[in-house]
Every structure is written in C-alpha cells, then in structure tokens.
Image (tube, rainbow, N blue to C red; front, side, top):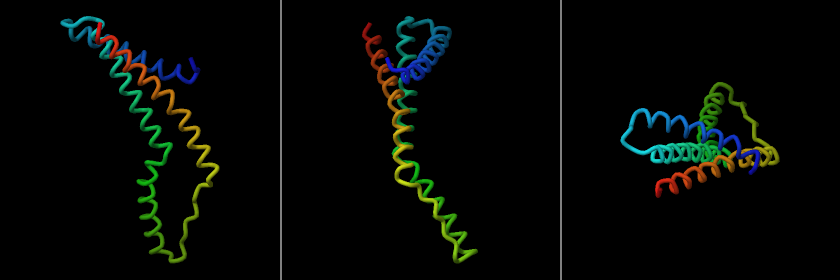
Length: 126
C-alpha cells in the first residue's frame, strides 16, 4: 500500500466510525453491518468529491472563472489608465509542474473513494 493512500484511508476510517456511531445511536432498527455499509458509502462519496474537485482544479476548470474576473479588472483599470497591461501568464513548465503535483494528490483520494464504495457494496450483500 502506498504511503500517499494512508491519509485518505485514515479520513475514510474516521468518517465511517463517526457515521456508524451516530447511526447506531439514532437508529436501532437496522443491523450494525448496515450502518457500517452506510458509513463506508458516505466516506467514499466524500473522498470521490475531494478527488474530483482536486482533479478539476489541476486541469484548469476553475481558471475559466478566474479569467473572467481578471478580464473585468483589466478592463476597469484600462478605463483609468489607457496604457495599462497585465503580464502575469504562467510559464508552461510551472503549469505542468503544478498539474503533476495536483494529479499526485488526486489519485489517492479517488482510489480510496472507490475502495470505500466497493466495500460498502460488498457489505450490503451480507
């Protein structure tokens, strides 16, 4: 098991224990395995959401939103000073390094999310 996968699995364990404890206290009509399965599903779903948002951030999905704000700011500053020009483009090498770091962060969360959902599915058949 990779050392990078330990943090997401630890997060999943904490979320599963917290949900299972809460569910057992609040709902005594179902079995313990039922509540553990629900906890694993919720933990897996949250880890998948974290992984997918990290992936979208790494691939520049949110750059479109910030580019619109940047264009608005630049247009307003040009109204004040006609010679204003922004030159803040990132270099390609820095962008690739940032995307690689983000993808290294994304993969463990997605893997742990899929593992938790698969375990939840297996437990639901018991």
